Image (cartoon, rainbow, N blue to C red; front, side, top):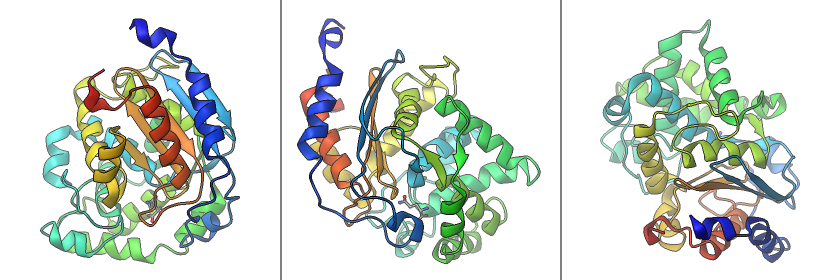
Length: 314
Ligand code: GLN
């Protein structure tokens, strides 16, 4: 407690910002036309504490595609609706060791979605929600939940959604395959479309930090004080992030940094320091697995500086 109060978060995120701002490594996602065209030099860092303090530097107001980071919050919503054992039974919680859109991974997992952080598992999770609400209200319900997480009205970036919907035939194939294996809980193409729309939410770095801080704060939004995730589910969500959040390189990430995190091909990464704060970084160029290069470096630096590795137990 004492130590927390004396830490200058602003100074630490500024150091991380300066250290990597000229790093040109990595490459924007190019399989979604909209993402390929985003300015690769964009860079923002936000740290949001469990009591609602926000520290930020760089392009923190710019709105980009949330992409796979949405998977964390779809999981939260589904857990709230159905409970954790349904997630375990109908989706799974095991790392695939394969790319986020791998079809062999589904086969190797025993013809199952494997976990909610890969495309197969995320679409199956979305199908639980769409099946529960039905076509008439499903989007309204999802949208309301995401707005509460961010503490503001989030909008889908229509151009991104169109770009992605026009090129997501591979995800449609995954959804249909899962249907054939009995792991889709609504019309597979509806689930794929809603998943695509969720991936197309426009968020800024600050929104992501607030959303992640809900998990750092035991499930309560630190700004609005509204409970959005039951406290007992928070460690389950964090466990899934800690084992699968950065796709097939999550093990290396946890070895190096030790923070439950989630990346998206839009260039964002969120990391949660349970009971303390969350960090969000945005920088579009990605490594081969699809994780923002600069975001990984910046979070790695901040975590080291703040002794935030969860396994340190500090
Ligand atoms: N919408 C993207 C896809 O389904 C999200 C992938 C990601 O961020 N890893 O391919």
